Amino acid sequence: MQKTDRTETTKNTTSRDAVKNTKIKDSGAKLIFRDPVLCAQFLRGYTDIELLKDVQPEDIEDITEQFLPLLQEARDSDSVKKIHLKGNSDIDTLYVIALIEHQTKVDFDMSFRILRYIVYILTDYASEMEKIHEGITSTKAFRYPPVLPIVFYDGTERWTASLDFKDRTALSDLLGMHIPSFQYIVVPLSEFSNQELIDKQDELSLIMLIDKLRSSAEFHKLKEIPEEYLDNISQNSPESLLKLISKIIAAFLHRLNVPQDEIGEFTDQIERRDFTMLFENFEAYDVQAERKKARELGMAEGLAEGRATGLAEGRAEGRAEGHAEGHAEGHAEGRATGLAEGRAAGLLAGRSESILDVLEDLGPVSSEIREQILSEKNLDTLKIWNKGAAKVESVDEFVEKFLKGR
Image 1 (cartoon, rainbow, N blue to C red):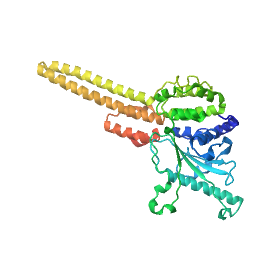
Image 2 (cartoon, helix red, strand yellow; image 1 turned 90 degrees about the vertical axis):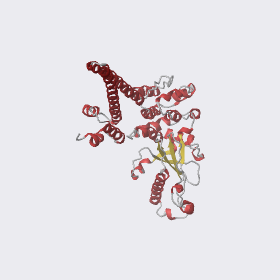
Image 3 (cartoon, helix red, strand yellow; image 1 turned 180 degrees about the vertical axis):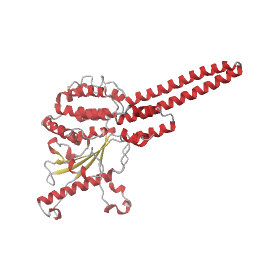
Image 4 (cartoon, rainbow, N blue to C red; image 1 turned 30 degrees about the vertical axis):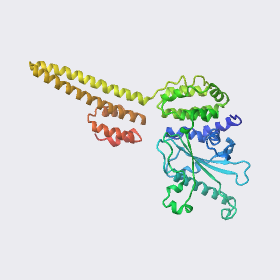
């Protein structure tokens, strides 16, 4: 790990690029590529491009802000870098597009998204060259800089989208030579084993190890990490970079539904350079799993209560009839009614709690809204609300669409 000039480089970038992205899943990877130290580690260790094997943080210039506003869709986590090449007589600049995909579903339109970036970058480059030397783009000797598109993919499914834009174009088998053709690089995190990451011995590898986790229960997989690996990072990383690592890992832990106090304790250990027992002390805990257990327990208790009530009412009714047949019929009817009512109550309660769980992830839920949802007795209505809660962007939007006027 190289320590030269990293502290100041990271400090400047960290202060400029605090997490602005509202999508927590994207925030962590966004910080990776916005930081020149981590970006250099990624380009050197994960892309297998010979030109980038010796790239250093000072060779990387972030020009993302020049291009993102030009796109109609929000791509807060994408980044565009200008890499200053050393000792290359043909051209001294390489542009790198780093696109980040966290979804488990593959983006099959990735090649077209990249094509638009390439056009924007080369158009901007030509404009800058014309300002320096008017008419230069029309000369025979003019050359456009290379643009290297990279997709960092940490989804779980295999990346099956075509890497070449030509394959997304009709009649490419007949008109192939007349259709834009380029291939982007996919760096799939899932294909790196933990040992391969550990062997890299840099800060980014630690971040990648956390990013690979798909539930907090998987933290036990990291308990076998060699102490010398963690010691190397804790002792040689500048303070500013450790703080940045903490921010990135915190974003990833949010994705795993880890409670905020545990995230704070974990990241504090990193910033204090206290990597001893870092993973052993982490309490694997999945909030959604616990909520599911609670709902199932509530349903079970509702069924049990319904059975008991039905049995008691059936016996009482049977005794009131005063003969064996009435007792048997009342017992059976009461039991069946109690069971049905108990099951229905459990289903209603479970569905209501499920809706509230989803809404609470979007923001605060008032007592009035909570009461309205819990008091709803129509299971079909609750099913509609449950699906709606998963699609809205805020609690207010849910209220406007489903509760207003009821």
